[in-house]
Length: 409
Image 1: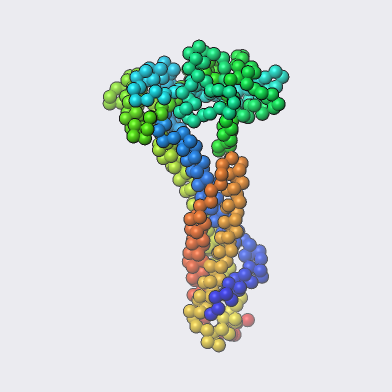
Image 2: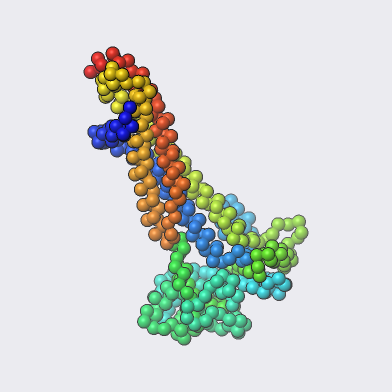
C-alpha cells in the first residue's frame, strides 16, 4: 500500500466528482468555520476585556445598582433596588479610612455637542464625575488638565473632551479655552483626553467629562439615575480589607439589615472576568453545537461518497486483490482517502474561520487572537470523523470477493 498514492486518489475523487465533493466538503468547512470562528472571536473578546481590566488595575473595585452582566430573569430583582445617590457616595467617602481614592460617576449617551456653527452627531457619551476619577481609572489628559477639587466644590462649568470630539468640532483649532454647548448649558474646555481607541465597537474617545454636580443638576434622570462608586486600594495586600470596609459602610448607609443581602452590586476585575467568562462560554457552546451538527452531516456525506467510490472502483479492487493486495492494505487505502477528504474541508474551514473572525474583529475594533489549540482540535476532530465515517466503506471494500469484483461491470 502506497500512502501518497491514497492521498492522490482522494484528490482525484474530488476532481472527478466536483459537485458531489463540493457539497460534502462544504459541510465540513461550515462545521470547522463555526468552531474556529467561535474560538477566535471568544479568544479575541477575552483578550480585549482582560486588557481593559489590566489598565484599570487589580486594586480597583466599584459598587453599582446592577451587575455589568445579568440575565433577563434577574432584571426585575435588580430593578427594585434603590439608586445609589450622590449623598450616599459622600457618606461612604467620609467613612473610608483605608483609602482616599474614592469616586462616583454617572453617564448618559446620545448627547450632541455644539461649537460655533459646528455640531457632533448625537452619539457622544457624557460622564459626570469628580477629580478622583482620573487617577482611579488611569484617565490622562493629552493637553490641558483634568478636573480638580475646586471644579467640583465650586460647581464650575468646565469639561474635558475626547479626541473624537476634537476632530468633529476643532479640526484646525486648539480646543483649550473654547466654549461648547451641551444641551442648554455652556462649558469651558480645560483639557483633551489621551487617545484610547475603541473597544467592542465603542469609541472611548467620543466622550465629554463634566463635574458630577453639573451632571446631576442638568442631565441626570431624577428618578432613574444611579451612580457608580469606585474605590482604589493602596496595594494588593489592602484590597480585601478595603472591600470589607466599603461594603460595611455602604450597607450601613443604605440601612441593609444584617440578615439581608447587599442592595448593591460589588464588582472587581475577578468578578467581571467570571461574568464575562460565562458569556464567552455561551458563545463557544453555540459554535461547538452548530459546528458539531454540520460535521456529523458532513460525515454522513463523506461516507456516501466513499460508498459510491467503492462501487465505482469494484473492478480496480478486484485486480488489486488478484495480484496479492491484502485486506488491511485495501482497508487503509480507503481510510486514508476518507481522512484526506476531511482534511481538505478542514483546511478550507480553518481559512474561512480565521478570515471571518478577523473581519468581525476589525468591525468591532478589537485585536484578533488565533488560538492554535482550536486549529489543532479541528484537525483532530476531522481525522476522527474520517476514521468513523470511513470505516464502513473501507470495510466493505476490503471484504469484496476478488472473483465477484473482477466480474463487476
